[in-house]
Length: 108
Image (cartoon, rainbow, N blue to C red):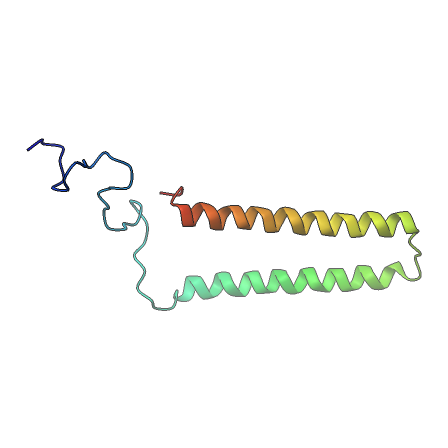
């Protein structure tokens, strides 16, 4: 028997579709997941990020109210709508590619 033969008649481990799969392993230096809460450091990061989000919403509310009765032209409205639609399509397309890449195994 050939040293490359995996025991399947006529096929070797180098043939397409027959791969020696190794168990999933974390990258070197990656922390092990214990399923427990993150601890004091994790909570502090969450509180800081939530505070930054609240500040961003507060600034957006303040800026919206300071604008007052600003009128936007039809061209401005069309540009804003196109910007939102294109941003959404690009984001959805990139997420679709990430999903497909993960499903097809290109990330390994």
